[in-house]
Length: 528
Image 1 (cartoon, one colour):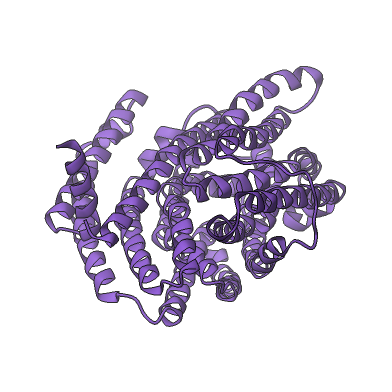
Image 2 (cartoon, rainbow, N blue to C red; image 1 turned 30 degrees about the vertical axis):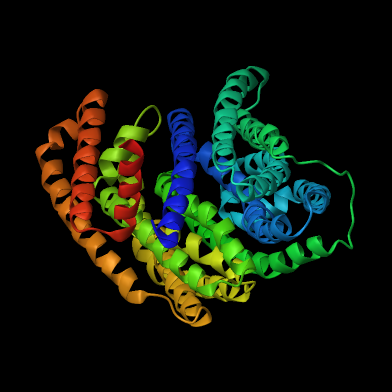
């Protein structure tokens, strides 16, 4: 195999390892959402929980997983290749101590400001008695989640740089497991003492964050990690991480403005709108995690190593191959989610307090979110390349352009489409982001192979069209089963997905997509 083929196979293998772990996490996440749907439906309590959880999530994206993880991996990779192990671990220890202190202070400030934060994020909640107060209480309980989840992101960056992908990717499964077991247990106990059950789910979320950090620590120590308990504010490595984080954090603040705008608009729509949007976005997060996030995690250390060697041609090849592989997975996933939105929502959520009306509203929302899946996942690939090139201002610009586009699209469509306008706007802004970032990268990297990318995209679209036609007619034939008893729904949906996936893989293999052929050849070589 050529060096390029070996690298593509290695990235695909790493992404596959991450993908398996992410699949476990996303499945548990869906179980968690099913529990919420059955216990609370779409309304007062779950609306309050969604907004309350969004506040530490906003801060996590702003200070933690997004900016911190990408910046840390870039600098940690440089230390790992050019410094002694002691210097590398000393940097890691300093980063852990610094961010523990910083994020603890942010958390304390957030606890004191919980009421005003809820009023800012969802002002219309005040019109319903007790809703704002419940949301503020849930916010105070879940805010410490920020500290644990951000430190978990740093540990994940260390493990990924050391070639360990499975354990950190599985860590989010423990978050969901802690949320489910701890949350349901507390939700069962607390009402006996006069507290709402939803508070138990908030406590479970905090327990899940602690588990997500703790489960990675044994694997970290096995890599040779040594903790140096010190804080050095003059450390050049820490300065480099902060320097990379600042523009990224500014860019992510634009994303948080988008989320704030979306939440505020959703809270002003009919009761249940926040819940419908959240359930649908949770479902579309499954393919985003499996494909976009998995490849992003796998590509980040590779790009950092190429950048450290100033090997731009290798970066170009890696980018094109990674984008092709992401398109290969997300485009058929988009078609599948659009064609099977209602059967999937009905199968997963329509139990207990979740009604047929909730199914229709959530399925419509999922269809519009799914339309932006390809762009959303591709952006996960493009942004780490800017980090590797030490050029983070363009993702910032893209984020603020997305804010303006989002506000404009929602204002033009919210009256007509209500909560659906938010899902539509999200997909549109993701595509605008993708077009902007890919065009800038094309210029900054001195071009990359567009003909190879378009050839791959053409083959993927043909295979997706064949798959979609099969799904369309097969869904009509199985319509009675898709609305029947639960076991019939499960078998019919599984059969449709199996038939569609098989046809897509056969057609794409017949069309000889290079990235797919390389992986298949590698598997065949190992088996024979």
